[in-house]
Length: 459
Image (tube, rainbow, N blue to C red):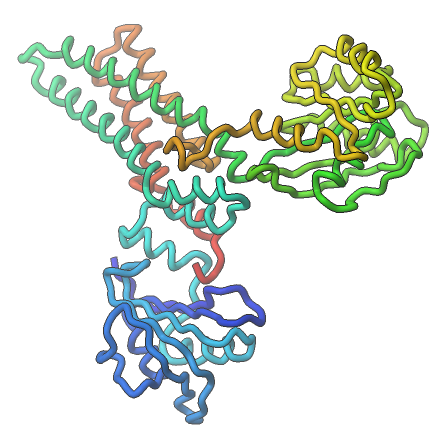
């Protein structure tokens, strides 16, 4: 599917820089480039996949716009499987604008958001899950996140899903033969075969679905909330973890009255860490709003770091927070241990009913490394490169896998109540359809538009 129109766009960030890269793709890419590029060679004399020095010249004024390096790439061995020209020019705003203007004037049109990648998909260069992996790779915040994106871009997820879908299609074919040729009396054998395969398919799909919690963390990071009563060291902990004085710290209870957020990297895990107002009963209207926001932040958190001050011990406000986080993933940190003896700390631990209890003196940086290690171990063990695990990182993929599982469950229920094989095919087809939507083997045009609209213009 080669498109009749030729597109062009800047593929590097807008602004002043060392270089800017302008990409042209389409059936007239070489023709357009030949009208503005001069190197002493005709465009058809330039070998494919070579980099060539030359000048961009305005044919109307004969003015040299810039000295550039031009890369010519003949289809189909290109990203879009179309003819592609990439122009490396100097990264000034005016220079880039003038070159783009000349390209558009000579037969190309401005590319839409994600249109280069969209053409790669429509021309069979990549499937839809690989296309989505490209934007994940661009937006990845950590090494592990980029590894997950590369794994998907290389097609590991696609291979797994196609393997599952292939089994479904083969099952549908066996059922069709059984229904069309009942005289061969193979329905019982076919039914048992279908049943066993559906159980295996469900197992594989459920393993993928289960991986999403970890994959979501790699893609989006974890939402960590620091909670506790006033003046226990919440803001000091935020400052230590972020490596900056992000929050005001004083000895006056109630200093933090609003939500303060900071994005950090904990041993390769992206995290949004939130400092909340100290939770207590207060008559101050502004502070009360902050306390209400703290309750909402705790409700939405992936992990709560509950801080208790060792010098005051467990007070009524602490008990209230502990009740709220009872069924949430949490770490309890006993802070200010430098102010008390071991017996006081031991007494506090005995009163707590928590799985994870750490001792700390945040102001002295004690316990910070242990906290980061605990967070890492709770959320992420090993790496993709070490165990080659295929994980879901995309919410759209997770939704479709869940729908596929639901259809398989419905098919298995139909077997249990003795429904005919041809009735079971409806649910198997629905499941195969869901899996096909992940890779793009069956996809709605509106969904496809939504996916590629999230890309930048030059990708």
